[in-house]
Length: 220
Image (cartoon, rainbow, N blue to C red):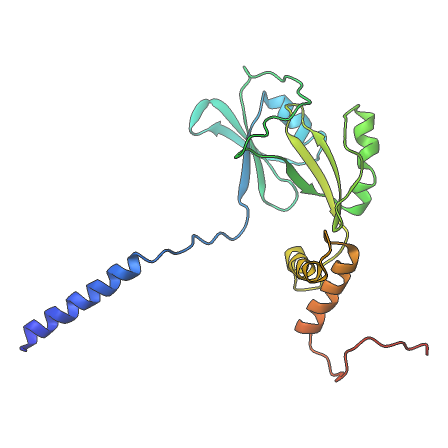
C-alpha cells in the first residue's frame, strides 16, 4: 500500500470514529437554577406580592424582549437567582384562591426558604393580611406553610430542620438520609435519619486521628 492510499484509509477510519462519537447520546449538564419566569397581572400587583409580602427586592425591569406589550420584572429571592414576572397593565388582578391548574405538565407550587426565626412569624403575618394558609406542615426534614398568591399560584415557605456539615449541601444530607430511610423501610425521612446522615458524612469525609470512631459513653 502506497503512502497516499494508507493516508486515505487512516482518514476514513478517523472520520468513522468521529461519526460514531457524534451518535453517542450525551447529557446537557445543568449546574443550578438560573431563573423562573411567571405570567403576572399588572406591575403593581407583582411588586406588592413579591416585594411587599415576600421581601424580594426588584433588581431591574425592562420590556419583554419577545413581546413589547409586556414589561419584565426581575426579583431577587435572596440567593442571587431570579424570579421574573411578565406584566401587562391590561391584565388586572383577579383574586383567585383556587389552583391555577392541576393537569400534568403544569407547575404545582413554588417553594422558598426562610430562616427559623422568620418561619415562626409566617402564620401571624398572613393572618394579619387575611390570607388563607395551610398552617404549619411537618415534612420530616423541613417545616412548611402553603398559601396562594393573588393570581392563584400555590407558594410554599419552607424551613429546613437541619444544617449540613461544612463542605456539604442540603442535598448531600438528604440523599444519605434517603438511603438510611430506605434501608430501614421507613415511610419518610425523619430527624433520626437526618442525624445519622450528618454523622455518616462527617465520618466518611472528615479525617480523625482516632482509630476507634464508634459511639462511646463517657459517663460510665
